Length: 102
Image (cartoon, rainbow, N blue to C red; front, side, top):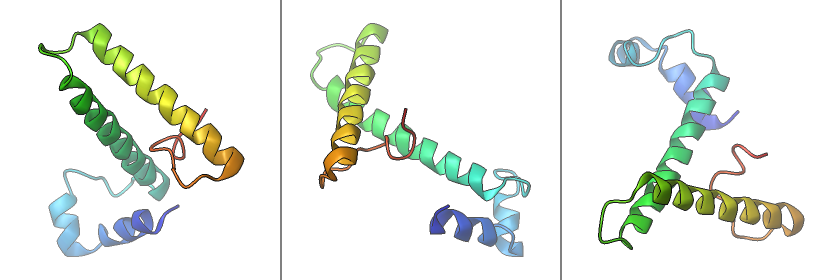
């Protein structure tokens, strides 16, 4: 577990922050679940940024088929980066395959 997850888990139990986050985060959420939520947020941001850059290439809104193709290409490219990173420890890290990998 990361330091960020543990720190947030401890901070949300303090009275001031507990009042602010009471409706958003239950106190029964374990640090591992919190870490998973953080990982999912990072992956969602990476997908969204990729779709934004790919949408600029089109003159029209992307169709679902184009969106799925763009996401599949992005996942395949990141998987290849992950494979190269694990074999040779290249400096270029994959965006999300270190968080969730096949």
